[in-house]
Length: 341
Image: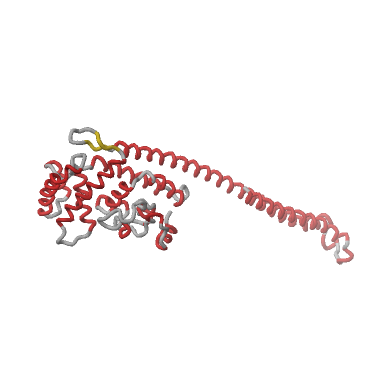
């Protein structure tokens, strides 16, 4: 509004100047004819005085009028721009309000899913519920990984592959014919020796370790955490996909920061492992994924994992540009932030 008023005043000032100049020229023109003896003008040559004055002043009046119309057009154009910007800003504010409302509805659903996650004991009694469940899920995941890692001790393979196999077993269970049939289908491209190893080792480990767990070990958790992490992904994706004129990167980050506050160390640790598997590469590790869709680094989703908390591998090796434990942004991360939208 201030800028528009300044432009309006400048245009009006220029209009007044042109109007004064025009009036001066119109007044001066007849005086030229009155002082003809000084100019050597002859009425016989120039025609009647009225025609002469009219012929000379008409272009001046037309030019001044055209200039004034032009300035009036500029004022109207600025007014239209201001009105358009105001309408656009109101639209943006409405969109922001809709985004905020929808985000907190998604966050509410996520918290409800989190609170309703349960693990039953052998007698089907609810003994663990909510955030407490993730502590035990992470502990059990280490059991799965330990068995898979033991199989590959003599064969050096990428940790991502071992995590992928362990996570597959973690989802569908490690013991029982029903669970094993799912694992066979999911790992059908792996060698038969691995499948035999999985079947035998998980049954043996369960007998050795079951007493350390307050629930049935190696029964699978697809129904528990599959929905939770899918909804977490969709919520973050929703905010990330908003256009930059609706939400800036800083605004998006603040929304995700609110969401991240709901994730404990165990949830973030599981997210870290999931993101390194084939089922979780959409979080960041999918081939040719644009940097604006690499969600874990972009929003520091696993930044609260303490150093040394995960012993299988170092999260910083896989996500060097995550700002772990508020240590500050690296030069590489600062450059990434410049590119985020």
